[in-house]
Amino acid sequence: MHMLITRCQKHLKDLKAAGKFGRLATEITLVLLIKVFLLWLIWAMFFSHPLAKDARQAAVTRIILNKP
Image 1 (cartoon, rainbow, N blue to C red):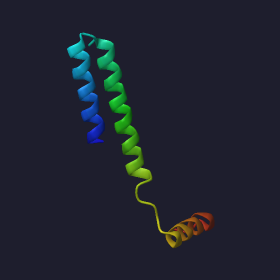
Image 2 (image 1 turned 90 degrees about the vertical axis):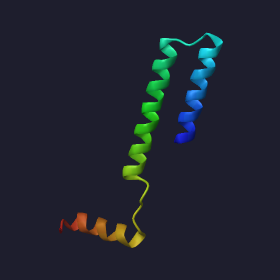
Image 3 (image 1 turned 45 degrees about the vertical axis):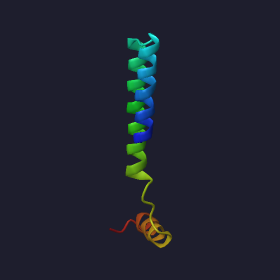
């Protein structure tokens, strides 16, 4: 994640040095960074810690049988 932010910052500096730096480039970069952050957050919340196979089986059984 940090590497991506660093690369985007370098790209913005290169655009500014070339005289092609504009509001559109800033907005696109900002939106892309926000999207990457949100995707990482979703991954961290839902997919980074999978349950063990026996725990998954117990959870599915509990849901199917509707037992707390």
